[in-house]
Amino acid sequence: MQKFTTLTGIAAPMPLVNIDTDMIIPKQFLKTIARTGLGKNLFDEMRFTQDGAEIPGFVLNQPAYRKAEILVAGDNFGCGSSREHAPWALLDFGIRAVISTSFADIFYNNCFKNGILPIMLPPEAVAVLMADAQKGANARMTVDLAAQTVTSSDGQVFPFEVDAFKKHCLLNGLDDIGLTLEKAQAIDTYEAAAAQSRPWV
Image 1 (cartoon, rainbow, N blue to C red):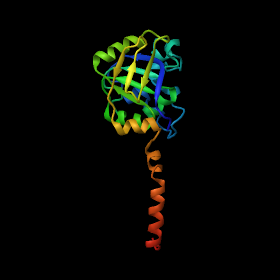
Image 2 (tube, helix red, strand yellow):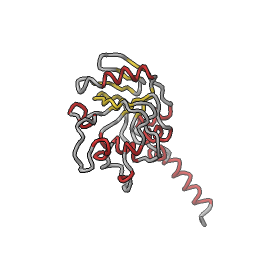
Image 3 (cartoon, rainbow, N blue to C red):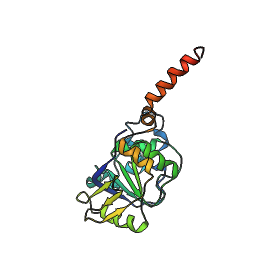
Image 4 (tube, one colour):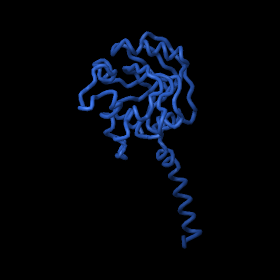
């Protein structure tokens, strides 16, 4: 998993509330178990017509936000089903951080396991960052995980809270497999001892 330390990038404003996982990645794209390739279908029903043409008014289709790495979203982002494809699609598109007042619990935890930082801030802070994101590509925000801050394009700093263990995992690029591999030597030692004491197993 890619480490998350400091990110400075374009933030796309998505003031909609209750953006659910089916909006993030519609159900017809859930046939794959690969974590790559889903970015082209991110927000598919909002980005494209039924004929596959781009909808110009959708934020990620606008020239200023095509390379956005941060989303500033409305309340309750990632609600709905528990599909892990949702953070996969966001990451494959290039989104590394999502800022909102609240997240669905399963989506929130899935983000950390896939290299995305979900940041919860009070409504007044999100309102400032939403307005900042609406300035376009010249308004670049900075997210500093180590310092636990979001800095707007004009220098306003907003601190955020994050679980210490989740922070450690993101800073070090550790998903569940990576955490297990950190204990590889201990596991090997145990398995060798078990094989000697119970050779019939």
